[in-house]
Amino acid sequence: MSRILLFLLPVSLFAQSSLYEEDLQKARPYREDGYRQLLKFVDSQSPFAALLQQFKQKIGYPPVGFLDKPALRCELAGQDHIATYSRCWITVAPGLE
Image (tube, rainbow, N blue to C red; front, side, top):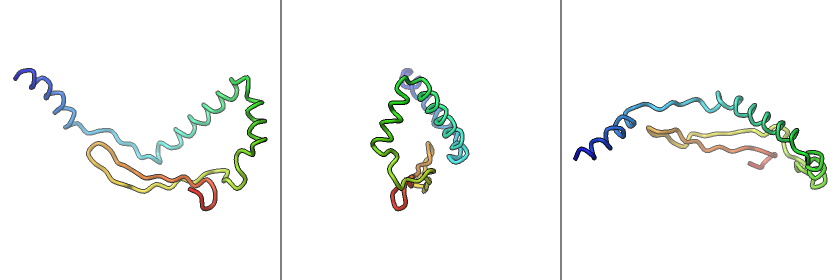
């Protein structure tokens, strides 16, 4: 019986505590900046950076018609005591999400 109580005590304490939530759009600039920094770092460290750029040009990447800045659209899907769930789409070209 004491083993069950020792197991349930931490679980019940966790269930009662509120979880931190941050607005997705507030955090987006930080994530995007970190992503750009990572890409810049990887490109500068790669001995194949010039070959990669040449390869992208040969295969036509990014495809013609793609937006320079993709647009993000999110809708609230639901929420519970643990998280808020969203459906997100990224428009990469006119009519293409």
